[in-house]
Length: 83
Image (cartoon, rainbow, N blue to C red; front, side):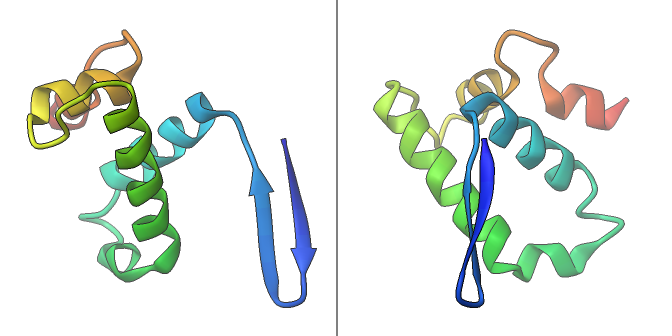
């Protein structure tokens, strides 16, 4: 896992589980920080995770399936967010 500067761009190599964790945390706090929704980072992270989920056979339009894939066997993050 690392970050590397390439000009003005930061390139990162991170474990899938950590990327899922970061996405869950960011998504859970969108109501408090709606400006995050318009960031290139969040959009790219979601696109990347969608592609990986599809490769794993997940129907991303099925919210429960997407939720289970993101949660990696833990309590579904949407349930934790609502609690």
